[in-house]
Length: 110
Image (cartoon, rainbow, N blue to C red; front, side):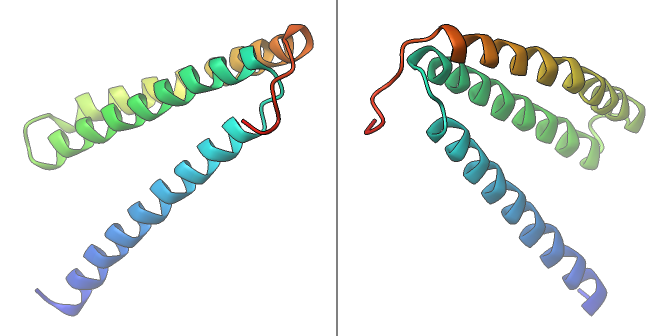
């Protein structure tokens, strides 16, 4: 393995690890900053859904990189996920705002 290949491999590993760490920290703060019981319950479900979606996208990426899936199929899945992301974020934010107004305040110690 040449120096350029090793640098690319290490960059991919370190970059991926930093991305996952950022996702974990973001998830933790999102759950920690909920104000109501209902809001927290919704955030747990949304966090699980987003992590599952990211994992599914990673599976498609690996399938494409190993030659099992054609590039066009991977790109279609990736573009569809990007298009879906906007409405999902908008609807989730509206739901969170509604839950924050209507919900029962949660114990700050939990």
